[in-house]
Length: 469
Image (cartoon, rainbow, N blue to C red; front, top):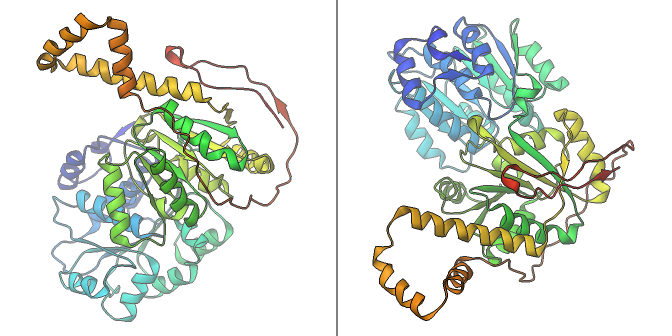
């Protein structure tokens, strides 16, 4: 790994980077930062979670002349959440240099943004529509911009922003530096690069790095009507610290969040129809651990930088493999292990194969846990809580009553009763979910392979079965 100190970064910016906690550069940062500092146009092909923001943010911040109170750099992002996230990280990178950063996006009062513009930010991060809105109102001038960054260009293409981006480029100086980042390189992205970039350098993160190898990936073959019970039992068995459940539609997200709460889990959902205030409130609760399960659509969760996510559950398999890679990239961050599980109906097995071809890896089949296994999982969680309390040594005030109990009952019964009180027994409350139409039938090649049951470290069951296609 390359140290940031070896990348010719100024002492001021290096001080900010160290305060953030960055020491070693990721592959995309190692490849991009030196080229960016040289002023070259760059095409970076990398997934979310590989450190893209610092990869373009450090060269961008280095080029800012803080004595010039004009917009010198813009970053175009597909979603409000990503724009906010990028602006926050750029602010941290530029804090010691006193670089002013402003995020602009739809759903926020534009007059408030216009007032913020008067504070003369050096860098603007925004969504395409809102950036164009400011340009047309003459509240944003790009004639002094020396750096333009397109983040998650393929997602902006999917969302229909290609013409907006071209319009934004038309207002920027021709001698600018352009940095384009995209997880995939479809033809329209390549054409845009040819049109708006000058001899760009390509920086690719290898697939094995992009798909985050520390994520254990499984699939569960299950009928649509059985999905929710399987999800509930998995949550009981695995007891994730923080989990994200992905649903295909806004209605699905709302119904899943409500159903999870009925079954006793702390869950909330985010999707495009929620107000910006509500979405940020839900994300804040999730980051602080006040809710255990975040339920989200692809667009709402795209680009979110949430640390500590241990499990991702694809309640509905996505139609395109790129969305799958982005979904599972929410976990396994910063070198930590993560787990991703995908629910697949019989007619969706072809989509699973397409995903496997994209990630160059076969997912392990997972047998759904039974009710008894779910109960055992919750009992072990209760046991862990008891042991933790004993080790904390804060139980002296309870010892007198404990002695009374021991005089009147045998120790085994007392411990069993304590476990029963602490155990959240699997809930079978009936849940009504609207059935989602399955994805269109995809033609698949037949192949076969067998897996033997496996055991995780510590002897815990992995529910791994065999698979035939």
